[in-house]
Structures are given as C-alpha cells and as structure tokens.
Length: 143
Length: 141
Image 1: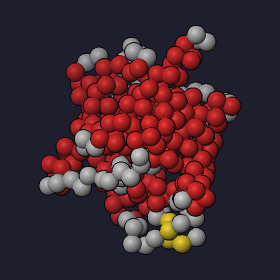
Image 2 (image 1 turned 120 degrees about the vertical axis):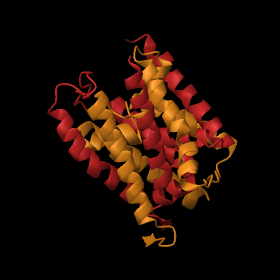
Image 3 (image 1 turned 90 degrees about the vertical axis):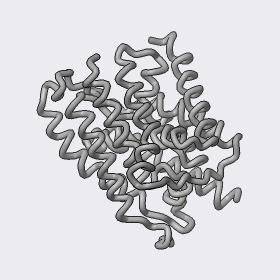
C-alpha cells in the first residue's frame, strides 16, 4: 500500500468529521432521531407522517454549500469525472441498495457505529468492502 | 410538528452538510481516492469517520439513557438486531454504486445544492432507485 501524502488532509477531514458527529448528536438529543440520509429520503418518497421534518433536514443539506460559501468566502465546486451512464447506474444502485440495507454511510456508518449496533457494523463493513472492490475492478482491472 | 422542530431539523441538516464539505466527503474524487487502496491511497476519510464517531459515541450513550428527546419527542432508535440477507445484499449494491461514482446519499444532496449537473443526475437516479424499492416492497408489507 502506497499512501498519497499530497492528497491527505488530516485536519480538515477530522474537523469535518466532528461537525458531522455534532449534527448527528444534535439530531438524536434534540429530536430523538437517527441522522440517516437514505432513510430520510426514503420516508419522504413514502410520504411518512413526519415528512415535513425530513424535508427540512434535506433542504438544510442542499442549502449547506451556500452557507459554506458565505462563511469561507467562496466554495471550490468539485469536478465529477463519472460519465452520465455511470452516474445513472451508480445512483440507481445507491438508491435501491441503501433502502434494502435500511441505511447508508450516515445511518449505519456514523450513527450505527456510534450506537455500537452489530447490524450497522456488518452493513458498514459490507458496503466498504464492495466500494474497495468496485474501485479496484474499475481502476486496476478494467482501467 | 412545531416550527421549532422544523427549524432544528433544517439547522442540523445545514451543519451536517457543511461538515461533508469541510471533510472532503462531498468531493467524489477524494472519496474514490480513499476507496482506491491498491493505488495511491488517500486515508483522509478514515479520519472523517473517526471524528464523527468520536462525537457520536458520547451523544448516543447519553441519548440511550433518556426516554425522550430534549424537544419532547420519544427516542426513535432502531431496535432490530437481526443480520438479514437484505441488509447484506442491500449494502453490497450500495457499495458498488458508491465505488462507481464516489457519491453516497448525503454528498449527493450537497452536490445538488452546489448546482453540479452530475449531482442533479445522480440524485434523480438515486430517488428513482428508492422509488423502485418502495414499488417492489409495497405489496409485501
């Protein structure tokens, strides 16, 4: 294994992680809920009774770049290299997969691991392994 | 649903999203750099998880001891402990999609908010995938 030290951003990664953790903490302590994005969206699609609360959270996420740009005095918009076909296939897989798994990186990865949930540990190890394997196939076997 | 709860939810979404941007999670190239362990590996996202879980461990420990949340709602924490084929199968599909584009649900919404066209396309496909789940599973429940 070769570490890319030029790309490694330990301080911003840790600081951003703490912010994500604080948001998840505030959500459970104030509202008693898991800050899981796929579950939040799934409940919106299924018109759950608490849909306004879910929509408010989703709108907060969508508005976050504007707040960041305001605070930081600008925003570097990332380049997305994936083709439209890849994005559609990936999006479908992420949508179906997270609903069957009852969670994604936030619900299982952050909240579930914080709760020491065995289900979330299995889910997180599984999607991480699938992610590692997919990038290996795409970049090193096909690429 | 009080205005106070709605505003709280919106504010928490904002902080969560800013955390995704600061951490680099909303940059698909950085996510793919983390998932590429056989290439030149960028370990940053391991620290994102460490930071988030470090705070989360304390918060969920406190939350688990309270019957109600501070704004009055009952604690709605998952109770299922079963490791099911759908948990594993779903996580596999999700992981493949994540590895293809480097985008998971939270960052997808942040990219949408940045007005990135690829983010819009990804979110549309992701919502279609979620609707497909609802369509396939609706009859069973």
